[in-house]
Image (cartoon, rainbow, N blue to C red):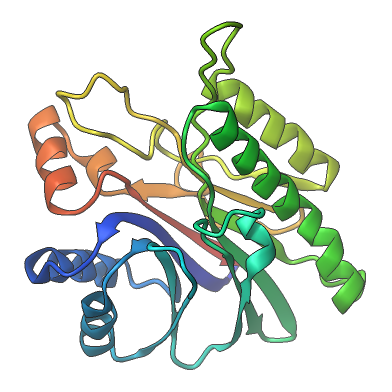
Length: 268
């Protein structure tokens, strides 16, 4: 099957005005050669200036609002695309990020990609807001089909979904795996599925951390969509997960980000 388009999704932790780090990050992103990319936790205007100068064959869109961290989208020139900021995914929290909806046309097909950076935190409030955002993302498929027609089901939502479970000091806590099970069950009802990745974790706070590596970043897609295979997976996680030793993982995390970059290709 031929490639329709490729996507890179990457949380670059507190991505702001550090010219040396910006240069490394943009270089690594450029090496992936994505047709579309999303960067999360963009905090400084210098980032935007660096991207436009070092990746001149892309057009850029960014969310706006009172939140500090934004989602920045890049689309390779030559692709027909329309960007919309979706404030309903702030879930009533003024400091939360809105969703970034990109509608991409390839041939006679439209694809709707909803980029999300959901609420972090393993407290009840954090998980409650996050769960609301994910439920809204799943239900959004029906909203699109109603607006565009029943045959417009080429829908994906993706990003740093922060699926870290919940700790509650007085009763049984909810493990991250249970939160993911709920997401999978709800997605299945909407005829969607979470794409398998070639690494078990996408976030790592380093070898000296008491918090183990975690599976926080995901792609959830309509069942009928087809993807390139990376071994037994449909998403490859690049960056620190591919480093061979703890020390090289730590170095990569320090120089780039505590999140790996997710890369996948949609097939026609």
